[in-house]
Amino acid sequence: MTARPAVTVLITAHDAAADIGACLRSIAAQRGVPEGGFEVVLVDDRSSDGTAEAAHAAGLGNLVLIRVDTPAQSGLTTRQDALALGIGAARGDIVLTIDADGIVGPDWVAAMTRPIREDRADAVAGPVYFRAGTGWLARWQTVDVSYYLALCSLLDRAGFPGGVLFGNFAFRRDLFDAVGGFERIGFTLTEDLAFSRALHRIGARIRYGREAPAEVAACASWAVFVERAKRVSSGGFSALAVVLGVWMALLPVLAVPALFLGGVFAWLLAARYAAGVLFTAWSLMRVRRPSLLPLALLYEPLAFAIGLRVMASLGRDSHVEWGGKKYER
Image (cartoon, rainbow, N blue to C red):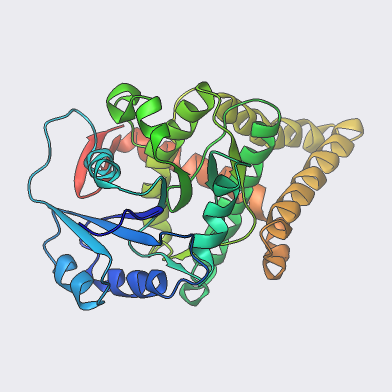
């Protein structure tokens, strides 16, 4: 048995052969890592495209590969089961999660874990960017995620639970046991959001970082993005859902009287729109994405339109595909 590592980098993968090599090579290039080093635990969840072979080809000496051939009968999603399996196998005191298509910089492990190692936080939510080479949709998704995490950080400061993204997240390993794992959390299609709420309930300190981004692949099309939105919008009732719902609803609520009556309603609509643009701009600046600032002018109206499209799609089919399986939303 090798020496116990300080950090476990956890990846769950389903048919990720095309991406896992680049992900692992970026992790292997880390510098300034904590004393004790780190291990990489990869849970290959029912892949049929050679994900395991592609992972081994990356040549990481600290890679632990766990293969899942059949779904567990736990009543949870396969993603929840894979995460729980990986966390159970983790030997590090800190677990750092990333998606199988994620690529990180050489200081990622050190920067994401530093607030926890220095006892300034129990968990750290890092920025997520979408690869610019995939065009307009990638830029839109970067704005969308930056807006989401900025709002979550404000809610957290106000004492309300926000959300995190397992695409770039670090937490103390013992916290998973403290919340009872996914068995206690229960079935959810938004496992990272549910976990962050569970952490809030036990008083864990979540820091919303601005450095150490993870860059991931964007959705292949707007249709795929809408299907993804069907899943990520299934988090249920919460302060986050209420704030987002009320804030976005103000746009059409004010637009109708502004259009027909003008006057004070037009001024209120202008003020609401300007506030949204400023918040979006701030969310981009906090994660160092000034090149995307022009999109702040369009983000909220387009986000509202996409929300309507998601509702229409749910009306036709409420099933959601996640991790190679279909679930009822």
